[in-house]
Structures are given as structure tokens and as C-alpha cells.
Length: 297
Image 1: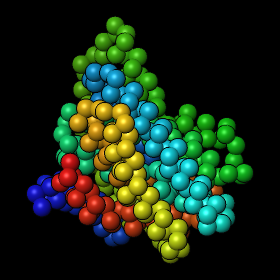
Image 2: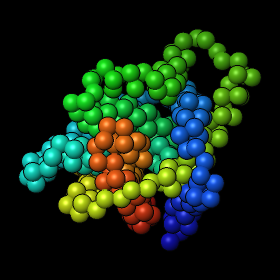
Image 3: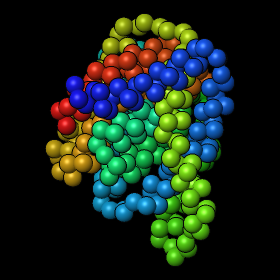
């Protein structure tokens, strides 16, 4: 129970605060989310990757993200063929089970549950996951209605991508950042985690329609909450890694469905109510599953 009270409860309490605020005041979540994505998040990415010592672990984390992506995509394709799902239903399942909430939820859980030393790994994985979500996620949400160019444009609009590249460039160059400038960036980075956590609660409060397709809901929940972390364990077994990095891999793979996938489902009419239902269920379940997982780790 100590893990629950020291890690999971403080994190979920902030989500609840954001949820209650949105229910009481009906704020424009999109505007607040945009502020977090374009101001706070890039600062968090830049400072953590700029200060990180890049080594083999980051390359392994990148390979793991690709492995997890394609493993879950293949599982979804097999289930779609087995149950005869329509393209829209398959897309909803893809969005719900392949893409996890490694940002708003994953980063604070890793920070409080694993420690500050694991933080750069969590931030790096979040950036990679965002790139994959804005490419493969857009593709599966849109299918024939949108081109690869549309997905590419989404990636190029992500400020976190440029923050990551800037961190790499400053690390390998001899250019020093003025203390006053870096202090300002660091100040924004410090505010990013609570802002992102509150935004998640507000996004969950904005979910309106639900759809209970039990076949899809059950399979997606099982893939996202149970099969995904088991795939992480399999990867770690085959490719032995540092225990701390292994913990990060297992935790991020056990995160609930990313709320962003609901926005994709709405934009491209890929059964948004079904995606919202799975997002809500996995987020609620995560309070229990993450408590158990953190205790085991």
C-alpha cells in the first residue's frame, strides 16, 4: 500500500483535480492543452535531454518503442481478421491498444515511482511515442481519407521534436546557453509536469459519448494493460538491460490509452465513442494495475 499512497494516489489526485475543474468551469481544454504542448513540454524535453548523458540505453529504448509498436499492430491485425472487424473498428482498436499515455501519466509515475535518474528515459520515450502516434496513429485513424503527407505535417508541427533535436545539437556543439536563458527554460520545464497532469484530468472530463462493444473493449483493454507490459518483459529477457531502464520500459508499456487518440478518432470518424470508452476504462483500471506493477518492480 505504500506505493499506492506515495506514487499512484498523489498522481491520480492531480488528475481528479483537473477533472473536477473541467466539470465545474467547462474550460477550453484544447487551448490549455496547446499551451502545454507548445510551451511547457518542449522546455521539459530540452532540459532533460540536454542534461542527459546519451548512451546505449537510449538506442535500446528507441528499438523497444519500435518493437512494441509493431508487435501490437500485428496483434490487432490478427484479431481484426479473426473477428471480421470493419476498418473503422480495427482503427479504433489500433488507436486504443497501440498508443499509451506515456506523457501526462507515464512521466509523473516514473518520476515518483522509479526516481529522478530515470526521468530522461521517460522523456525520451514520450518524444518517440509522440512521433509514432502522429505518424502511425494518424494513418490508422484516417486510412484512405488522409495521406502520408498529412501525418508528416503533424510530426513537423510538434515542438517537442525540435526541442529534442536542439538538445542533441547543443550537446555535441561548443555553443553554451546563457544562464539567464537556461534558467527561463528550466522554470518552464518545472511547471510542465503538473500542467500536463491537470490537462489529462480535464481531457477525461471532456469525454462525452461512450460505446460498449465488449469484444473490442475487452481485447483492447487486455492488449493495452496486460499484453503490452508482458511484451516489455519479453524484450528485456531477450535483450538484457539496466534494471532501471527495464523498469521504465515495463511501466510505460503498462500505461493506459493515450487521450490524444480520441482526438484522432474524432477528427477522422474512427469510432470516437468506442476509443473514448477504452481510454476511460484503461485509465481507471491503471490505478490498480500500476499499484500492483510498481510493487512487483
